[in-house]
Each structure stands twice: as structure tokens, then as C-alpha cells.
Image 1 (cartoon, helix red, strand yellow):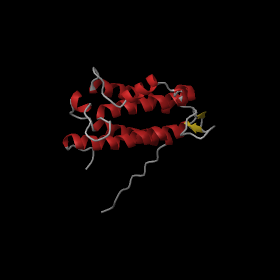
Image 2: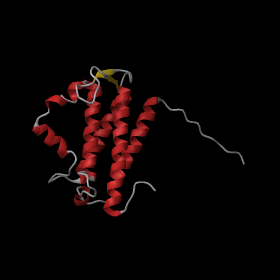
Image 3: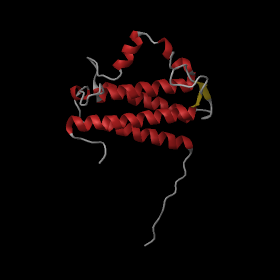
Image 4: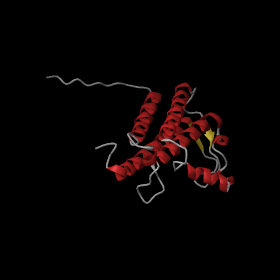
Length: 177
């Protein structure tokens, strides 16, 4: 019997989008068959809940995609954050009254679609933007569109892992395994 191997060569954009799609899938998959109440439930000592993680990843992806298009002003000035800004940021990690899991997932899907279109139409993945001033960025550092997309992928993967732990703590269901 002869073994057939399939060596499919894809371009970089396809690889980036496929990787991001895979991690998005795992994040969304952790919310399958949940009620809005379950999506807002904390199951560990952290403040995180499944609906809040999806909201946060949606915000992260939206902001960094805007950064690729518009530079540091799209993300904002971290050093000038007010108490109200910090409160809005904290709300990203919770399901607020009136929010539904279906609406949170729909917004995530819309942001994902816009990011995918951005990646497909960018003239140059090497184009870079100056990072905003923040204690966690080196002064004067720049990120290319490619580096920013890798950051979005890493954030999504990291939070998909968090979501898997939260879901398993909620009802024993897992994304994998």
C-alpha cells in the first residue's frame, strides 16, 4: 500500500487566518449549549466567565485590527485612563444585565469577519505602526501588521484555554480531549 502525502503550500495570510479561525472556534465552542446565566457564571477564583472572555477577546481583536488601520490612536492612551475607562475595561470580563450570549457571539462573529477582510486586503503585512505609550511597551517600539495579527492569535489562543478551564469547572464539558 502506498501512502499518499498531501503537501499543501499556502500563503502567509491564509496561514494566519486559518490559525486565528482555529482558536476562535475553540473559544466559541466552549460556550456551546449554555444559557445566558451559565455564560455569566464564575467557576474559578478569578473574575472570568465565558461570556466575559468572548467580550474581551472581541474587544482585543477589534482594537488591534483598528491599530493596524489607524495606528496608536485606535487603542488609546493607556497613561490617561480614567476611573470610568478602567470600569468599562473591567466590564469586558463580565456578562452585564441585559447582555445575552447570542448577542456577544454575534458581535464576535462580526468583528472576526472585519478582521478577516482586513487581512485579505492589507497591501503589506510589513507595514508598521508606533505602539502607544504604555509601561508594558518599549518606548518607540513599532509593530508590523503581521506582529499585530500574531498578537491577536496569541490572545485568542490564551483566552480559549482559560475558557476551557472555566467550562470544565462549570459542567465538566471540555473543548478538547
